[in-house]
Length: 474
Ligand code: BGP
Image (cartoon, rainbow, N blue to C red; front, side, top):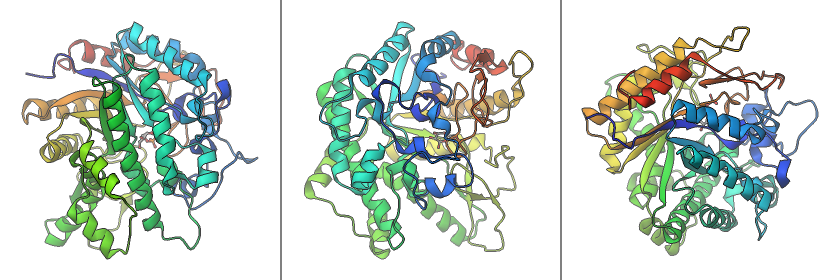
């Protein structure tokens, strides 16, 4: 009983939120570099405002972040001390191909990740690599319009072929696109999309989604050809949509919302566009350009496992009077009267994790991997930088309990768990440093000031014993 013996405990980060070193080692600029902190952030993330260069007067947190580019050996050593079996990180596309469309990769970028993976391996830590985590070279946006353009599939193919070849034997677990469904809510981050005023946004988003889905299937094919040991997963921003009431219209509306998410995984895991999506796109007048070869590729190269992030559940209602909204991961939700929320309004729902796991496992019957979960909170360190983060421990404990129930009581096959932001990093939604998730405090503030010193929080020792007991001591 309990978690499998080889359960992959660990933590997760993304290149642009922790690495910094934005122009080091021949790196080019990416979309995520030019998203500033402040009121222009949201319009940029959603593709409504164009900002494709650093502009004076703005603060760009990804430029330096927590400077993991220069601290990775120290950081991985700390992860090893916690007993990590895996470390989920992402590749910065522009370290490998600074513009995205070069024929030859940048050796300095390749060497950087090679050493990082070797460092992980030296501690027995298995890297879990997200190929693109909200990451698109600026040049590809300016020149080709991001993922709306079919040529992106070729550039992505070049990237993945390079990675799978170079890191064969070092990396076995790959995720093709972080939170692929976020393209609908944060299209600049998810697909490098900036909209023209008269453009049909839905049309563009679904065409771009199609290109990413084909690219993902192609990556799965190439990964298996290069090394049959490779395991490729899709990655969903998960979290169920509850109907606010048992009114049939509310239940139906919640089902429709869930389908917005399932659509992507249905294609990646079952290998075909589901009927409900084809019908809905037809009703909305969306026409996706796709070829017979695309459909054959999607069918033949489905993912090996389903990975997802889970922070909160959402609520859907058809009653216009019930419009009290609360924040959620990138987009808002109706308030759930039964749940507490984080300082950022994300509704805390451990049982919702078990329900989400069951829904995904029932639907796909493939192993699951929880690759993000955690509490974003304001930490108050003492003079030494130590944080007593019992609130974070409570959140994680309750979620790990729920995931244990899904495994033990429901029989879900779960490969591993990587909590989000295992070391403090820049928030994707707000760009702030004050929203922290880590077991390790980093002395860095919202303005980019601080010594960058790393200090273990109370949760560090707690998570260490969770891992050591394979989830028995919570
Ligand atoms: C997910 C992203 C992560 C991460 C996390 C927490 O959507 O994949 O990159 O940042 O959410 O969100 P935030 O940083 O906004 O608190």
